[in-house]
Amino acid sequence: MNALPSLAVAAETEPVIRLDAIERSFGQVKALRGISLGLRPGRALALVGESGCGKTTCARIIARMDQPTSGKLTFRGRDATAAGTAGEERAYRRAVQMVFQDPFASLNPVFTVHHHLARPLALHGHAKGKAALAGGVAELLAGVGLDPEVTAHKFPHELSGGQRQRVNIARALAVQPDVLVADEPTSMLDVSIRLGILELLARIKREKNLALLYITHDIATAAHVAEEIIVMFAGQMVEWGATTAVIADPRHPYTQLLLSAVPDPDRPFVPGDSARFLKHAEEVRRISRPASAEVEQVAQDHFVRALGAAS
Amino acid sequence: MNKPLLQVRDLCVDYLTDKGAFRAVKNVSFDIGRGELFGLAGESGCGKSTIAYAITRLAKAPAWVAGGEILLDGQDLLRLNEASLQKVRWRRIGMVFQSAMNSLNPLMRVEAQFHDVLHRHNGASRERSRARAEAMFRLVGIPGSRLGDYPHQFSGGMRQRIVIAICLALEPELIIMDEPTTALDVVVQREILEQVIDLQRNLGFSVLFITHDLHLMAQLCHRIGVMLKGELVEVGDVRQVSRAPLHEYTRKLWGAIPQLPARAREALA
Ligand SMILES: Nc1ncnc2c1ncn2[C@@H]1O[C@H](COP(=O)(O)OP(=O)(O)OP(=O)(O)O)[C@@H](O)[C@H]1O
Ligand SMILES: Nc1ncnc2c1ncn2[C@@H]1O[C@H](COP(=O)(O)OP(=O)(O)OP(=O)(O)O)[C@@H](O)[C@H]1O
Ligand SMILES: [Mg+2]
Ligand SMILES: [Mg+2]
Image (tube, chains in turn orange, brown):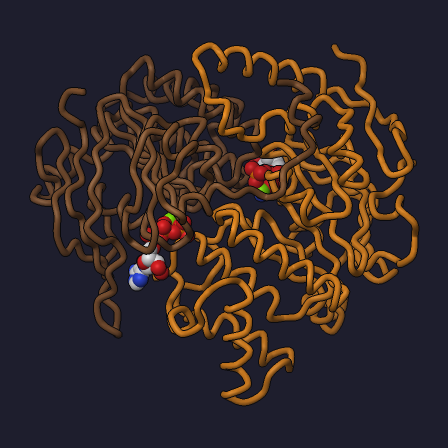
């Protein structure tokens, strides 16, 4: 079968989390088809792809908030597809944290920011006593570029969209997880703040050996954070490998389209452009859909799924 | 240019907190012309959404408009009573909130939500709203066969697109879009925004487009305003703000994540 991203590249370390041939269907909708990947300590894997292609579904399966229709989830070498004992569940949740895509739906409206961050710190024994907790909370907030003085006592509804996103990131980090699954965690943040957060994640990755799955629609950000990348289309992995290799030499028509559509301030949308672009995108979708099972190895760290016979 | 559609004058908005009033928007003034696409940019927490809420007069409980005027066609929205406001909201001013992904009714099928809004504001029959919903779904790239689904059955970006579709279906004169494409990949983002521009050219509505992404804004808008800590520090034509930003802060916002190799970007241009 095809090589797993992150397993394809020199196997220095075993993945903490591994997905093998994951399928997930919701009635008629095949949300995931044959997803295989590995998350390894100290490495970041970026997941990019079309809206609705299955990224969040994949993240939810890793966070065990959803079950695959078939396929296997492995955690530290053990099958974790089905629910385990209470102790195993606790260990899993302590090890694997998720930053949710919608910052407006993922904070509890009745608790302050302090509570959201202090609870996991206390629960997992990372800080004891009032002063230590306040210190820990302040450190987490400063890490994501928020002023602890101003922010800690606020309730979620008193925060802007980008501020909520950052509290969400801080909350996941408070657990000090081994694996972080971040679903579009910085989509509302401007470049300078985003870079600050990417640097924070890079540092934790390096120093604490965090394994990171970073879901983003921004391919420049993907290139910045992740050593490896998977491009998804309609529930399938269509191109994957070392991020630099994939971005420098995109082979799949969908990857090429994605790279060509990155906003370019020097090229305003012009009349007529729309029709041309839409037609092109439609054509790419048409040829991308009937993908085959065949995978071509383009370079040592670069794989692309062959297009099926266009019907 | 003839008289602007929207005039914001010396707008001040406070949030009342237990530590006293916090001024989130300070003496902000700008105009949006008929058929103009106006962009509002600025760092997270600078007051962009607060302005959007003030214009729709949907400001949340502790928010308080402490001063200024918001004129729609010369009429001060801040002085309207609730009944007149109901007529303005959605029919004349449509809004896609930053929390769009989370703003659909979880207990109602999407088709019913289209009907609810279209019936209330245009008196549309079931058949007419169904047809309209199908057309709008096509426009935002979601198969019409999924109209009967509930919100949680859609992906984040799909929910965002559904809210855009409902807003566009009402054909308001001014559309406020607050970070409307944060959950969309760049391809779908571009498809939707080009559709919005096409519609805008045909229908002539105005747009207030809020985003942190100046690069995207420059591709889309005619004029741009840049905010910093509650103040509007620069307003100007897209060209001027992008080529020759007056404010140091604006220059900072123009920064980008170290760019992709040129070759990739040119691949399909
Ligand atoms: N609970 C559910 N019931 C039915 N269909 C679902 C459910 N969750 C997801 N889907 C469908 O599965 C597909 C993949 O959704 P998913 O949320 O994983 O996409 P995504 O890649 O995260 O998209 P986005 O970038 O827009 O957030 C979509 O067609 C979606 O409608
Ligand atoms: N209900 C509230 N009570 C107190 N302060 C608030 C409230 N809502 C917002 N604020 C504060 O007002 C400021 C402006 O918030 P606003 O939501 O307008 O920012 P924004 O520019 O939209 O940011 P973002 O890009 O992150 O969405 C922020 O500092 C925020 O913390
Ligand atoms: Mg998603
Ligand atoms: Mg906002």
